[in-house]
Image 1 (cartoon, protein in one colour):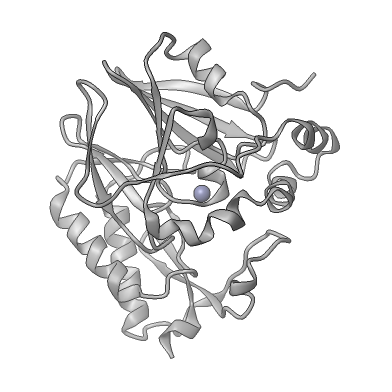
Image 2: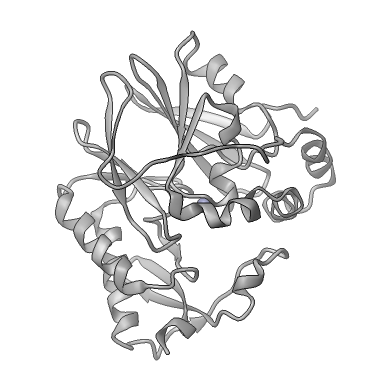
Length: 286
Ligand SMILES: [Zn+2]
């Protein structure tokens, strides 16, 4: 029988860092949620799809219980990251993401994407149709480049890294030398919504310069962590695209039936560079 915990599992990555994996049958689609228990509050970095309502009670049962508040920090607005935010005492996201909030909270679209994530399994779809989170009224606090999050004994620096979305943020724990990177640093980087690749190159460059060479990067969807080499490949890939070195790029697309009307005219291409690929809208280069 399906219940609110069926799609969640977790592991301890470090003393004060847990990874919850959300997966709806299709192992190609996993959603990483990071939980950091501090002395004063617990930080939840990204909140999954929100098509069941068990994330908070899963954390309380398996990771950290007690009266401490739980604050959620989004890396960006996409529905697989912000869907469960309403479960927490406070939810933070960069304001550049807000224009796409309604699109990402739209229930029809969330359940439609879920169809891809669960390979249209009837039982899963039916359970989620009955148990998804109603989060239309959610209010996000703005969080921005240069902010410092202090959970009590664990701190994160907030660093802007636009490209996947305009308001993408990553969270750097300097004391333990790791980054919670969301979808800003992955192997497969969907940047077709980026309208300004030059801006992205600037911020990736700045990020790379700031990070120690041995920084660990935990991502929104990968099964294991990445290193600074991936960020460098993304930056190099973006620079190659801007320089017009795109002869070998191939058409690319998304598997979702519900497409943002703004994206219908995109000329989506995939550019490979080192270990990563950068997906972009070739129209932005004209
Ligand atoms: Zn994602």
